[in-house]
Length: 151
Ligand code: ADP
Image 1 (tube, rainbow, N blue to C red):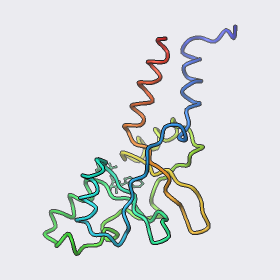
Image 2: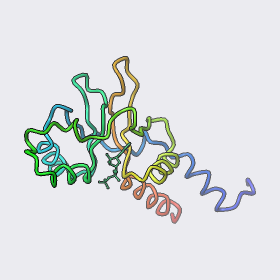
Image 3: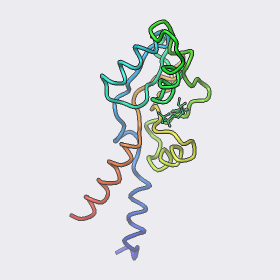
Image 4: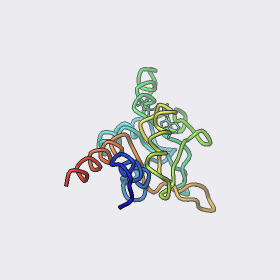
């Protein structure tokens, strides 16, 4: 018996959750693709944020729902507007790696006021996108934690 309280044990458990076990598949769009294509992909894949990649499949930016809405109210031809023009670009992208802790990702989402982070792997060409962590992921972890604790 460790003498630890229930809340201490729960805290220890939460701190051990890693990105690796919980991240979703990446949804990516080429930076040369149009804003129109990005909007289509967002609907088809049912996601709120897209990772934007270059020809080496490396992360160059992200595009959110609001980025696309902003572009859409600008009266431009969306099929002639490349998505790299409107994206939030590197190096201003907050990323995480599979060995990072979920709790640190959650803190980043709050501090930066964003919905998700790309999960990346370092390669000689840049950052390869291998997944994504969103507020939905964090909600699932939260529910799993409570459900597990009741057994
Ligand atoms: P939305 O704008 O659809 O509510 P977010 O709150 O996630 O979605 O995005 C807010 C802004 O932050 C957008 O301009 C978006 O491009 C940018 N953004 C989203 N995710 C990241 C990230 N991981 N790193 C840096 N900027 C991001």
